[in-house]
Amino acid sequence: MSLLSPYLFGITSSLLTSPCSTPILASLLLSLSSQPTSTTVLSLFAYTLGYSSLLLAASFTGKQLVKGGEWQDLVGLGLGAVLVFGGGTQVLDGLLGVPGA
Image 1 (cartoon, rainbow, N blue to C red):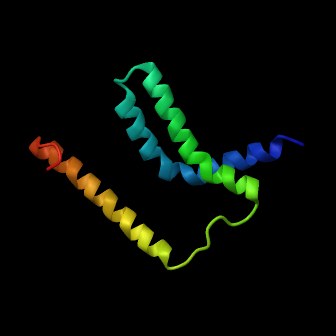
Image 2: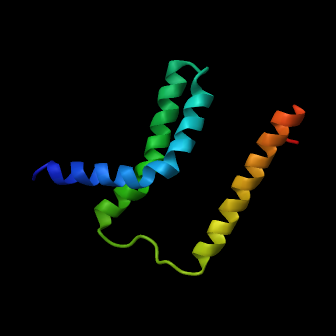
């Protein structure tokens, strides 16, 4: 089997997912910059496993993993609320200096 096809798939998928994953990876790298090397390596390895687990599962099954539906809108709204809340607490922490405010 040629390795060119998976390589090209990896390049194209990274172009599509990069705008979504870059801020998360940058935040992770920033938070790990003051940690010991072993902690940094293990954390990045765990991030990589989590990031690629669905793609790996899809490559083994060759089927659609999850059927779309109305639940996707609810999940999107819920995750959006979590992101807004998390960002809001970070802004308040930065402005007021009160953790968890």
